Length: 283
Length: 273
Image (cartoon, rainbow over all chains, first blue to last red; front, top):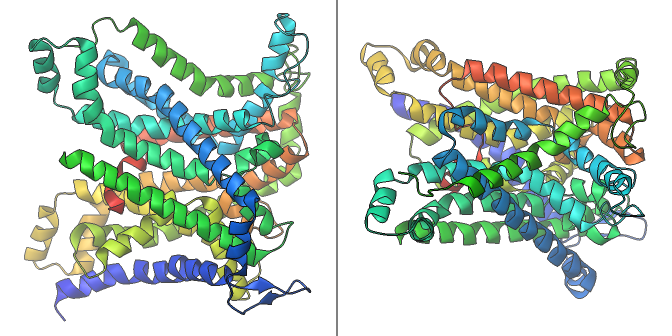
């Protein structure tokens, strides 16, 4: 064998085996489990059937929870863009000499533990938390606002806090790629700043927006920790159902079926956004 | 020159964004020194009580020890797999390369709950008991994707002519790897190791399903948070924050030329296509 070919084989083999064993095989198992079922004695029956999926699609509870998860995830994406886009724009065009430092300041929260940040929002939104004590103290309210914590609102704010940096970074990257001459010539040709933004800058930054938004969408859609920590019964998300079925509610086959549904949705969302991105790049 | 002439509003928006990002962190640090714990505003009666309680907390320390062991294992495995994977993706074309890329990067965008339960099914089917070993396996699987993107970015900045010169001068593949590639990739590998270590120290979703009797730090914190808020949590959170910031500064010193590569996101869309 040629040395180059041998090296190629040596480099691809270990990761290939790893993928087969710890990614491909587990996903296959997940798929198989989703067709199995539980006996009366809580034992897993290895007879393939569509019962789990039939249950999923006939019980409106699952659809409600999936729609809620999507709603929460899209709210997170919307808020992250509202907070992140102006920040990215500022960093690229107006941050001046302190740019590097300000850029690092966006990354630092990314390195702060997820739990730590979720917990901080719990401290802020709780009945005896910062927000409510502040309201009572300033006589803006006579009772603590108890709807803040244990609601989809708290979950959305927490997840937004976590995913804003993930949106800012790709948007910064795509804003930086815009040739400055384009912006200058747009204003030389008489476009007002607003027009330049809408017709030149915004369209050219869309690949970064799409990439950051996809990341925030997929990961907040599949989150189960924020709802557990900050959400009440009204903010149970689809990943919570999986976690419960693999935990206290012990029904692995049904849990696997829900997981397969999540997986399919992830792949569909990813395919759609990649199409969008590609179309935007060629257009 | 500037696309917007009077950026006052923009500066205001950016300031709001920074405030949003840092508000919870500031609150957390403040309240870790508050005698009355997490209730009451403004915080008063400064105290180190919660830090003292924390340092006397044996189960917290054993959880930290467990997390460090798991994180080190995850770093070693994810680099051992991620390094050849990134090299292969950068240098070779082979049948199934697109699928190979897709699969190895999948854990980046697949929710942790899925990675966690599918590995749980594997471990249970193989008759393996849940322990720190299974947790390390889970972290390695999830974080190999991160290691691969990071090292891939390092390889794409590496000038190939060094390797070609080395081969032309008669060095074997292994010699080139040891004497040329590894030294040139040192900062990239160090940065990757730090990133994987930090992410592993913070991993919950995958750990949740693969944990045995011994807790990692985030799971120890998690189980206490579920029981209710205690000011001790503010203290440990503050320490974790300080530790993270120190780690970033060290890694920034080590990796001066990698300003924009800290997030895996910009590469995801390109890499997954």
